[in-house]
Image 1 (cartoon, rainbow, N blue to C red):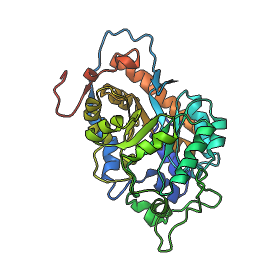
Image 2: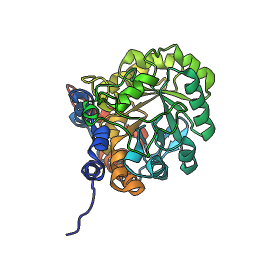
Image 3: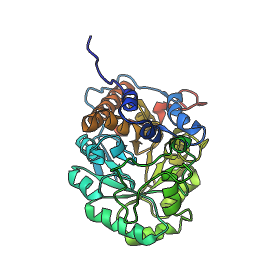
Image 4: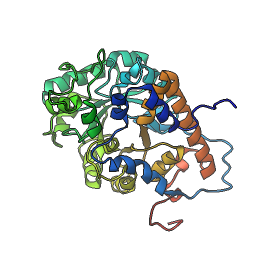
Length: 366
């Protein structure tokens, strides 16, 4: 019998493992310290249960949703992930073509290996830009002006990285960008090489450039220089979530950086319901971290999320087969979400409500 090929997004991980070198794969796959949060991010989704409805007439269904005013084919977007050209020569160009082609949005990383102008030229749908604030505010200002001119339609400010987490895989591998690949969107960019003592080149880059003194007050500066919607990525607590909207954010991303920053921080799904309850509809709530199935997306929306993000599966697809690999990842996610909605008794995303999900410790129907 012929090989049916990948049947879930997880299948692409094994293919990616053989398609890229050890240093690149470990960079994409790894977490910080003992990688407890990395594991828990995925495991948490599996602990919740779906209380499906029956006799709900799901003959016709729609997975469409709206995020920051953009209509998307499904409430799943491409999370910002760095260094796509380590996975495939076309890098972020292949990713944006496949992602927009699937009808959804891409968040382009500050650490993109393709110029933002080229990515936007290849785009056929929304592209948001993930931003770190740098010690040199002029560099940040120039970058914001550049991505705005290129056509990015929102700024996704990462707020959980005052310093880089202790990513031991990168230290062991003496992580650095391969020859011919560079960070393309920073005026102060330089070669991202391992340190003289063999440490991670990325850790040194973050220490040299990113501002560990970032405070809530800096959001006012960001709003002054940009009219784009601002989304805060890296929220883990209820009080930070509510303050984000107090400070003018249009959305937040419940995220722990894919388990790559503070190890033993909670899985994103474990804090999502409380954050959505605290926010009480004041703005959009997105969530990432370990989402691998259409059922995970339903659980996120049932707990109050507006949309979800996937990161590693996109990189796995890119490493496996370039643009076609990413297209296949999106096809699988879309089909799984559609099927899961049908089996759960939902005709559209608005029917994915809190009563569908049973969290650990809850009684069925609670």
